[in-house]
Length: 297
Image (cartoon, rainbow, N blue to C red):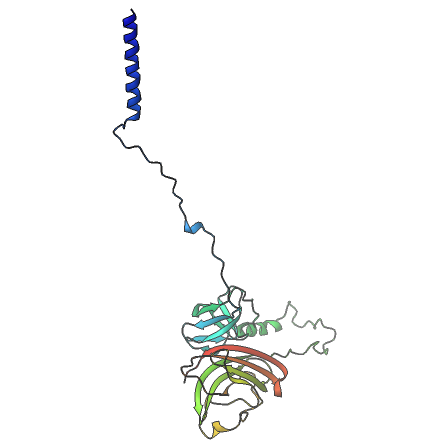
């Protein structure tokens, strides 16, 4: 009995040893490696980087091709000038739905014909006159009887009463680049001015930069700046500044030649500041514009 009990204990000890060895020996299959969860970055969900503004800029419209410029935002308004393809002007307003841009506080151009650059996020809505067709339609309706008694006397008890106010003075103009040319020993640049207001333009102040920031004409006031042609031949062009026509009437367009200092080699980009006034020497009602353009000879 004692031998049997000891044998049983010995067998049990051997079994336990074999079991321990089995746990410590390789099983024949590789142990799986635990890999950390990958971090997926979806670029579309990242917040947009802020726009870095290095300096204030104007909003500039550049014509994709020659574009008509009108007195209002639509084809019902007459054409007053043309913005050549590649030429630029400052955007000073829009018509409410941004389908038309007002350029240089004056004429309008279709947004579909231009490309914008610069800071254009705060363009204001600009006012504009009614189209001529609307004005013509309103005339006959004003005399139409309002009832079935065409002989009814006017309701105004004082038919001789004078108007309460006179028409407001409206000085408005549009400036367009024309050509760069040479007279004797001096360079000239000519712009055409269209009088879009209801008063004469009697004097003009202007300065030209090229490239922007470098003055080619530091500033001149001219009481007789208007010429019938963009450039003159000698000796006419060699006359002192101010030998042209002294007034620009409403609805009229004439050229303004400007004397320049020597042009830098390879100059292409220019900048014009111009102010038109209803009296000589910059007096009366005045309005100014700025314009970017490209020098062409």
